[in-house]
Image 1 (tube, one colour):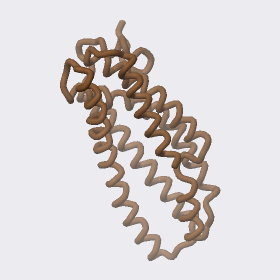
Image 2 (cartoon, helix red, strand yellow):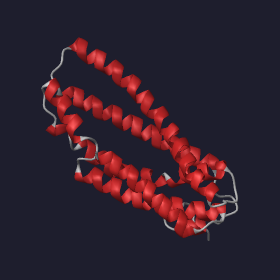
Image 3 (spheres, helix red, strand yellow):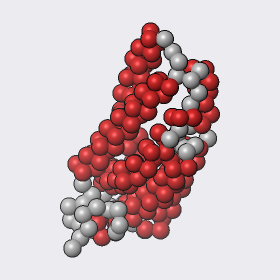
Image 4 (cartoon, helix red, strand yellow):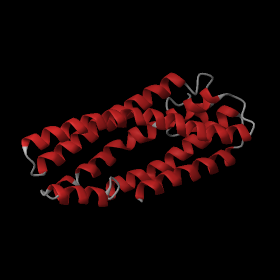
Length: 201
């Protein structure tokens, strides 16, 4: 029986005649965008509860947070399109069999890895709340210096995620486009590492 997700056996999964699926990929990205947006909002609400600010300042910051969350939500979809476009350049040079929609679908379905690992990353993020100073300036400096991947749990989830996702992307693109698995795995690992490293700096 063919696997129902690409997580354990991406080769067999993407050999199915009905895969990759752009609708499933869009659903995965939508789910990820909702999860991240809600988590960021909850995290920032906890941060605001920890910091000593006036009610007027709190209301102003909450308004800015709401606008920022919308930007995060839209940015996830834009990132999906951009990342798929970068991948498709390499697919095109490798004479891939199918169009951009196929690449977009594979990249989107591969993000199921992020959803599976999301609870670990979120737990690591919320563990930081107790360490945030109550002074607004000190809190802002703390958040700027630490970043979302300072927590060992979040860092572990990010590292495992980049390797796992790169494997699904590379094998999936190779199967879907009829090109070399080794080439696409190399591309996926390099792009994944660059993304992982950029989150650390």
